[in-house]
Length: 110
Length: 114
Image (cartoon, rainbow over the protein chains, first blue to last red):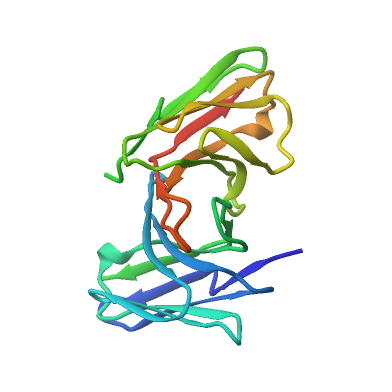
């Protein structure tokens, strides 16, 4: 069964800390997504990666295709970064749906 | 605001009721998706529509019936649901045909089945 594993499941940190969330998957993929879900349920797509590294503001996402592993980093974390961060992969091309990890519940304390 | 809207945002229904969830996007996307998020479980893909044709049904029970009348609208018809069907139902859309494409999510419908 194709699986997506995320770690840690829960993470509490102090404001300003550097945050790393990890994602690993079992077989080859065409793309990996990092999503952010705030209380209330709305989901926002942060990054979509097929190789290398992307940066947007304080967020950085990397992917290692050979190791089947991706990381999401948050620099200078802030309480407004508190949310659930979800890794999701697309196994094939075209309009295939995503397979999701269980999410990482991040709390940044002031 | 992602450009994908869902109505209603909250729905409470009995097991014998029939209701429908609606999703709408005007982003010019041709693929639309239904996902289910139950408490303490990962998001699960339910259905995929590509150019109005259903291309994936992820072993969803027949009490959930999707409909895609055009590329901008997607419905999920519900009948004789069970309490365990209570969940957040999320719609998303994307533009297939590109090698990799971003999915845009609606805000979700929080469904409670009594």
